[in-house]
Image (cartoon, rainbow, N blue to C red; front, side, top):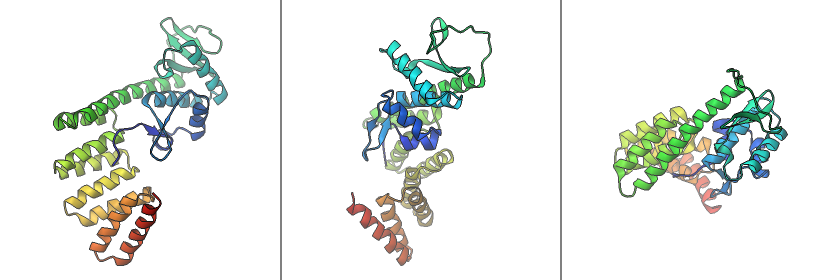
Length: 273
């Protein structure tokens, strides 16, 4: 059950549809600076995610990767005290534009743009990205508040986590943290409903299936819990805990061969840790 953290490259590919090649080029250029997760994977901050999504929107507006990188580097040099995620960046007729207090301008040439009140589809997409980034920022703030409050104020933490998923319904960590909080209070039916609602938004997140299985098992719903563990294993075959829990339930149900298979897989994975 993970708590907190940013988005990995896999998250950006799976949830947001950003190409791994584009992410890699931004990392190589030093425009985003991910940290390392527990398995050595890149983990991107909210600011980096906003910039990656902006670059993706520019790429989808048929601006070449080299031109995107060149424009972003130029902007970074012009605004060294400001993260690029805070700059309003758009696509304009195959070029990258930015906005300051005087209006829009072409990044590579410095040419000012006249505003005739019309926007192309790329601008609309970037505006939608800006709204999404704002929602994510509000959700991330609420998640951080929940983490801060949880040790001393469970009710306040619960409210904060619920605000997070209202702001941004795909906020995985808010669902996980809130579900753990409800389960710790033995509010298992509420935890189950929460995980099921989360899976309607994030159907391929193995941790949600695993945590749903734990909550179902604690209510005595063995078959449903086993199905949740099996789905978690389909999505994350290397999760030793899911194999162990599935093995226990198969054994309890008299499925000896299936129990042995999962136990053996658990042992292999546990030894490799």
